Image 1 (cartoon, rainbow, N blue to C red):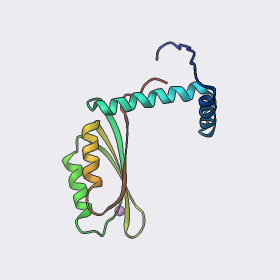
Image 2: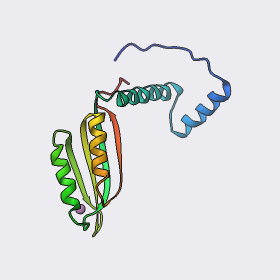
Image 3: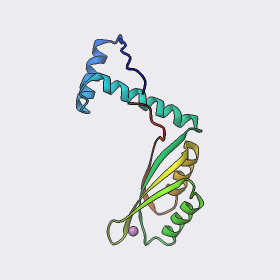
Amino acid sequence: MGDITRFGISIDSDLLDSFDRLIAQKGYQNRSEAIRDLIRATIVEEKMDAGHEEMVGTVTMVYNHHVRDLADKLTEHQHQHHHQVISALHVHLDAHNCLEVLVLRGSSTDIKQIADELLGVKGVKHGKLFLTSATPEHH
Ligand code: NI
């Protein structure tokens, strides 16, 4: 962590009012922390676009395990990418539906491709990838 630097920002008062309302809703105690989070989020976005930085992601998906071959196909995909799929959590939601959360590590390009493959398997009802940096910026 580097030294703390203070800097001033010139901003339109209406825009600042909107920002203050937004960060109050989100529970920020002060503007500094909100602005730091915005900067970190922007840097993470930038890394995602770069494609070669190491990233981590979670893929959450819900599917009906009675659909023919579906569970096997999903497992097969995960084994094909065993270097990137570093953890898996399976929850039997009810008599029919399963929730699976996978943790992936690798380049954003690889992670996005694997997530697309998994979420594109016929029978996966709902799913989403959350991607973030494996080397987060300092607080
Ligand atoms: Ni299950």
